[in-house]
Figure 1 (cartoon, helix red, strand yellow):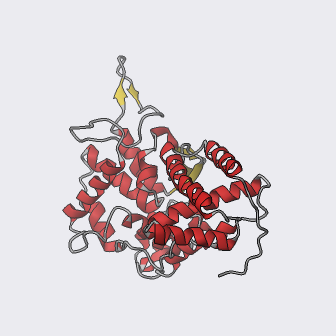
Figure 2 (figure 1 turned 45 degrees about the horizontal axis):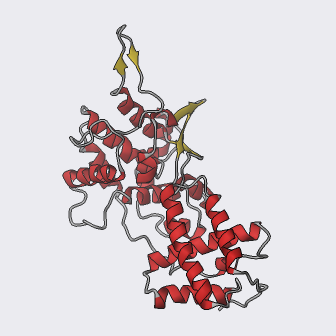
Length: 338
């Protein structure tokens, strides 16, 4: 156990509940589902606080709570991590409020950290096969190609993709940017750079959704309209769901043959892992990788550096365009091949 250097802080139950409620009320930029998760987790902490009777916000107290979750409540690692995160953030709120001097919960991990990703990545040949198998003469094909390129070029998650509106893609000067709403967020508070080929794929899809007004003039899709819509009979024209994104990508992987023999390991999220390795092999620093992939924890980013070289993207000049923010000219392509 790490040496305890935290001053004990004794709170009454009424005081703890007040800070908990104030903290939850402050989460105005979080999704209701996320706030609900924190509320349930902190309810368990309050129950433990009462039964324990000696919680003083020191490292040893936090470790005792973690042991309670694992042994008494018999929670799995994923659940323990969630409950510990909620305590860690409540404690930080109390630090900022001047109640605690330091956040002891930062010293205790929620669960064992992974040493590698559970899901694998696609090889460059598989990426080429996957994209090449899609019929771009069909609107649904253009949609799925744009989604795949978003996952590869911007490391977008399913949650980010489902919340995108047509107007979130903007061109500033010669560069493209996209406003995204991250996991657990209720607002689009991040702007990410978009590779030219990814922007082209999105615009090609959005072009198919233009309409003609009564005067015969073509009208682009409205800025507040969903960027990606469903084409299933059940939800035709509505905003695509997380399930819809997953089903579309899995179908493309099966039809192209790239998923053969790797069901369960090769998933839509594997495209994000492929993007991470591509970024590392293209020369991205740790900080740049964390920014491009919206990764908050440095060790998570380092997992991608451990896989550097596995894609061998240096042998395929064209593959760099998936993550490159520059539009390669014919001259640059020729120089790169040399």
